[in-house]
Amino acid sequence: MATVFLSYDHDDVERAAPIASALEKGGHSVWWDRHIHGGAAFNDEIEAAVEAANAVVVL
Image (cartoon, one colour):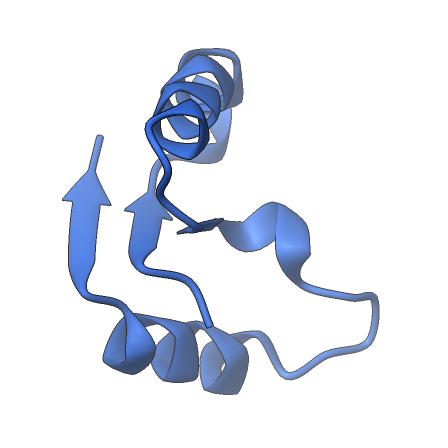
């Protein structure tokens, strides 16, 4: 799982993308909801990702 969970409002996706990219360039693994596959149980996947993360970044 990811080391960083990125939380953002969908209206801010254009702001979140460069932050995720910068974190990844810095050597971090970033999880954000773009990784949820269609038909997935969103709440379960998000909860599991938050619990597995070493840090949470909230925009």
